[in-house]
Image 1: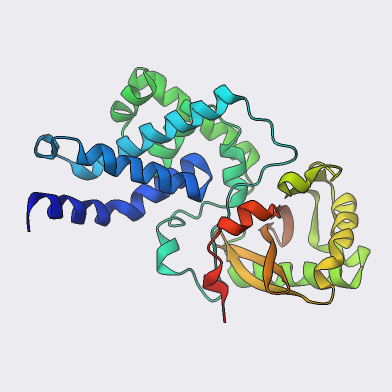
Image 2 (image 1 turned 90 degrees about the vertical axis):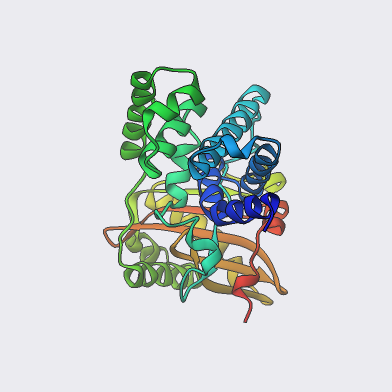
Length: 297
């Protein structure tokens, strides 16, 4: 095996980990793949013989690429038409497939990703690298142009925001599924009281419809308001449609399709036996980029 083949093999051994880092940094599967590819290009142009810890070098390189991408987003000051839901990782309800295991090894739910999107780029990098992947602050500091102590403060601020805002899901997947199934039945039946019964009083619903968001309601809060909205979405049970159970970022969720084409992915955060957050991706362009073949019968 020549040096090029050896380097490519080692890179492939790290690809799953690098994609997991990039996904947490960016909340986008497509952009995560782009960041990983850029890391490979930088590696191929580097003096690999001078790299003593290839895994660490690749981790910090993909993080630096992601940081540049996040800063570019901020500089463009993109304003979405409606709520933004990060790309979901969808798997069969019977278990996460091997390709997705690395992405979800630390149970990064949609609720967590939504909170991460509110952080400044440097805060997000410091939190993701240190708290999720154990990268020392001495290695994080040069990436954000700060001292190790300042990098520690960035992660600390991010950690407080995450703990205050990201609900912790119930660990029992079977219990999650019971709650999601009860929600679906109540929504299909138009049973307002039954819906309210499975919703937390402070539940939050986000529906990212992309270009379809014009005229759509903004983020919806409160059990009564979310129940009414769910009944409005009862078109899920219309002729020609199908709703399948799925794992969405490792938690109980649903994928709705019409005439064989997916039109929404619903990610639920269930805590203390109630739905505390419901994130719906219904943007046709983004749905088309998701790999939902794993759900095929």
